[in-house]
Figure 1 (cartoon, one colour):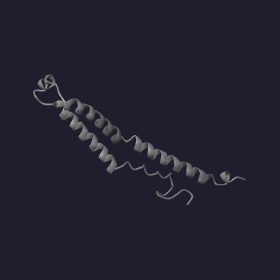
Figure 2: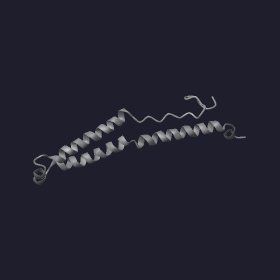
Figure 3: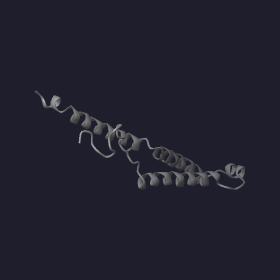
Figure 4: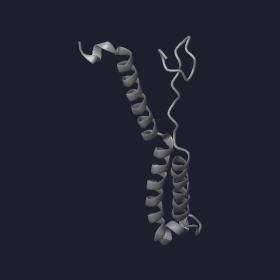
Length: 110
């Protein structure tokens, strides 16, 4: 008989481990800090570039303040903050929950 049918508990445990690893990877990829930081950096670059060489009409509208430049720089700073935060404090995978009647941290059948 094949080894696959002799140890179904090990197969289930292996599959659960693989699913947990994939779930942790998906959580890191779709972390909101990555999305927010990336969008703020992207838009910050666009707005900053628009503010690098403003027209006189744009400056007159904003009462002499280069609002595109300052807003773009603020967006860049905020975006970089989110990305640095993500790098320094990565998402931790959720702890596996123990089934009813089992002690936390103990493998099933151990």
